[in-house]
Length: 333
Length: 298
Image 1 (tube, one colour):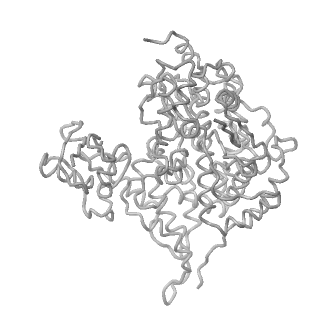
Image 2 (spheres, each protein chain N blue to C red; image 1 turned 180 degrees about the vertical axis):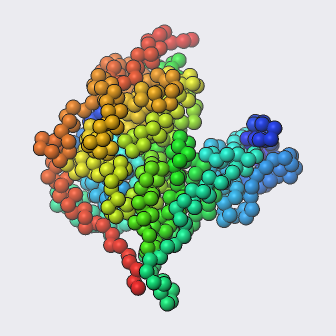
Image 3 (tube, each protein chain N blue to C red; image 1 turned 120 degrees about the vertical axis):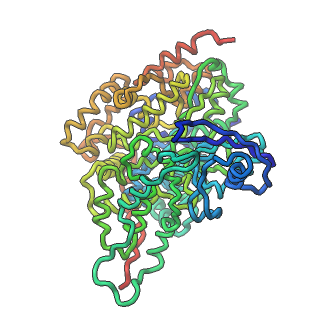
């Protein structure tokens, strides 16, 4: 089959950035990595890319393919093009990390952030004589994160990292869950405290991009949500993120629908006047446009707050839903 | 073609974006789509309740599904976030029959029961899959020829794609462009279309949130967009209501109308913009409306 590639080229020494186009003749079963290697071997020896295992284990060949991070070795050309030989596949280096040359990026910031979460077990108490024994169910939940091959795809396409390099980003947070969620770990609360700070778990917008691009089913955002739940459960709630969740939930439990007016003071803190003031000009603009829901001026939970019809039945569901909570698996000895 | 849906309007169309609620009802009437509003259904949790109490989120959404099933109707939403959460809960309940049985025990107290298999669709999906683009083209009275409109999807109607019917409907992540073209406008191709508007962290990290919104608006405007259209009112709030704030944070010279999907359809159906409250946006829609009032370019 004919394969058309358009590869983004960067030569930092010469300061040149541009695109190279290749048309290759490949077997129908070829992966994108096969095509790129063929381009390097037979068309242009200067094309730089990383690859090693060719079987989605090493994570070296992550790159952006038609604007999404993928492992080139795991992407069959025919699946990308849908069999359309005129489809020119756009191949670019991963995002959110500096480019060294062509498709090779500098992963230093990626590793720095992984190290920030202390990615090793820190057990508490005396070391047992034999092995640590944990129930199977407790480890099953960690298998997602154990599948991570550190390819950096989730970091490449993270939409928050695009605007804030300080964000610790999905890979490190998934790795943090690997240990915070391990029943043998003795530093869970300290971990969660650190992760609840600026740039940590609460800065994720929950855009699902990392879930979408992860080639190994780690679903980092879902781990971030688990960390949030754990942090709240551990009582680490004196921060905007946890307060946001609390006021949101309170407003639904109280009135059935979101009280938008009270989300800002409820999240940033009722007495955080400077922060509340930053929203005033916006609120006035909304008021003028008829977009400020005046029915919601009474805070959720206060007498006279706005309520949907049939709230008594909603409250019953809220009460009873507690019985749906799964029981936690614990270390047996 | 009788089309009838149980209608979950979501929180924002009943709160900070009332024009969406009004425009949806007006456009549905014009298209002959009958909506039975679920006025006792609660918020989906938007992924926020789920951070603290996923089980409560499951029970509340199952309750909404059961209300639609009691009416014997598929469920329509007008919010990408609602769609994502509803699809996610449907998947979880369908895969865990024992858990579902416990949820149904709670629902039984108010005579409700949820059986997996309910069709839950955003208005965007309904337009393309149920109403049909050919029918939409036929219904157009005032083609939006000459207008360049950028799609803005909202994360949860796109991702995670394996929960959003991508196998059965592989084009769902192109529907907005298809609808824009069907009403005669030109779809603007820009990178931000499928990214995050930043709304979920507006109170948590205001600067990041506004940078995200400002970047997308700026990119689309730079590529000649006259407006952005979104099936998600949360995106609308960050891109429209917060646009002046995004402008001061990013220092981009932006002023781009952000319209709701039903408003765009309504314009093409010849409905008076005032009837869809298009004068109730923070960023004025006047420039777009003026452009559309010009004679159609040859």
